[in-house]
Amino acid sequence: MKVELLHIVDCPNTDIAEANARAALDALGLGGVAVELVTIHTEAEAASLGFGGSPTLLADGVDLFPTSPVQALACRVYTTENGFAGAPTTSQIERAIRALPEQA
Image 1 (cartoon, rainbow, N blue to C red):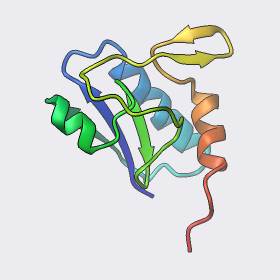
Image 2 (image 1 turned 45 degrees about the vertical axis):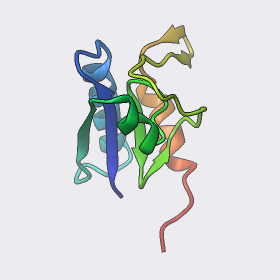
Image 3 (image 1 turned 30 degrees about the vertical axis):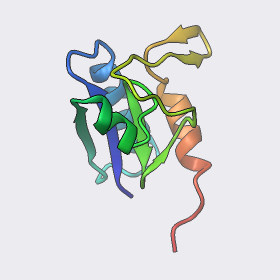
Image 4 (image 1 turned 90 degrees about the vertical axis):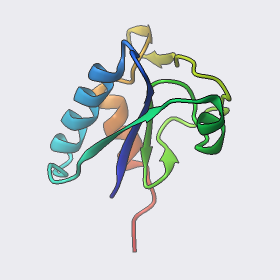
């Protein structure tokens, strides 16, 4: 599995999204899977990658929390168990990864 964390420069939620993704992978026994940070620098780059706002978590190229792509260097808001947040929780990421189709 390839996990990417798409983010914009100076996104205040990149670190927590990365930590939550790492914790979710560890909890699922996927500790060997790296979380690759991908910085989005331009609106054209955002558009070409199907960027959903910063931060966006992809697993094998699929947004773990599908949303409409944005063509701007914008923040993203997630709905969590505790209200709105700038990153998904560890448990949300775990559930999203478990829901992915099995790889052949």
